[in-house]
Image 1 (cartoon, rainbow, N blue to C red):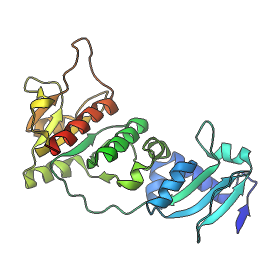
Image 2: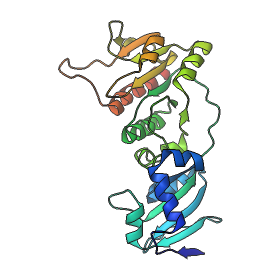
Image 3: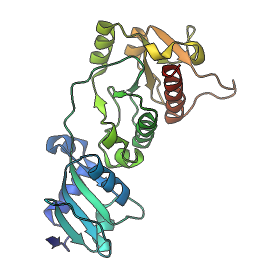
Image 4: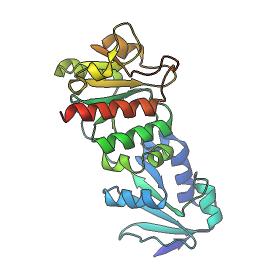
Length: 252
């Protein structure tokens, strides 16, 4: 049975709002929000547990067995959703449990990627190329509403893995996986000449680049060749180049 809700003060709607705005609350409650018809359908397809489905008036969406459903006026959906034009379907989902992280050669390490849009785009691209990604310290929350939306459901298909920068460096050292940072330095090599498939490759934020700790621990440094008049690439664009190179090197 679908419940009718017409008040902004409804406790479930307040929970959804807080999950959208508070990273701390998302991890305390182990829950997140998926907003939009395609995202909710992808969450269901890939086994994400949905606690509550919220539907706007006039929107038809199948309610799975055992899932609580609320029907709200369009005005309430616009109040809760962060989309400019809400699609009328929003889900309160359980955050999947993270399995133990095991690093592997040919993986991508994201260091301080703070923009949710950039992070979501990188996760989407990595999923397309089937490259494992590990989020180090300082990254945006992969379960924020903006990141989930930018990933177009990639977070459901290839669950984000998070590990401290210190743990990543220690694991690479213990497993004999070279660390390769993408950074401009005297020792930086053209990325086309680096045996990148043997390394864990670190990409830093657009603003500050790779953190000093990763720079100090790096075995190699790589650069993406570009016109000298260009200072840098957007982090998501740089990651796409690296991900393509990882895929290409792996398939040789």
